[in-house]
Length: 197
Image (tube, rainbow, N blue to C red; front, side):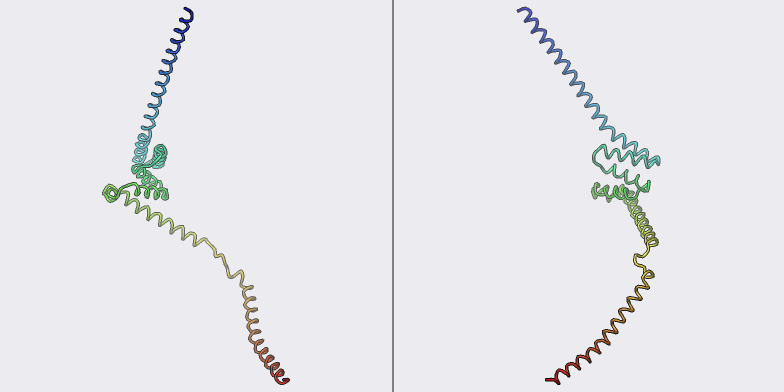
């Protein structure tokens, strides 16, 4: 019996030690979880400030890269991110992406902010962007018009066309003269027919 009681005490002590170890382990995991989520929450802010610094220093490609990583890590966008993307894309002359970022920015910003003086920089840059896109489009269309050849070239088919036109004229002549001849023939046959009866 004494051994049995010792065994029970020993089992209880082992259970307590295991419980304490488990509590320590769980608390350690919870602490690590909160630390990593805190670091992740700070990371987009830090990346955004880096992107702003790159933009201010004139390193626009890095500003684009950092801002896109901020947008990706946030999982969504906000007006500050879109504004920085718009300006950085414009400076790197990636006009199509700049236009998309500008239109997204306009959708995100309320009307009172869009009409404010602070937004005028973006509006004027957007107007310049529209002019650039129009220039690119007209240059592209001009180049296309100069370089494209006609799909139908008359010179290749002049001989055939002359032959076909000649055949058509002959058929018309035949129809006209043939009709006159056939008219005479019909009259003659009708007269013969009437004369018989």
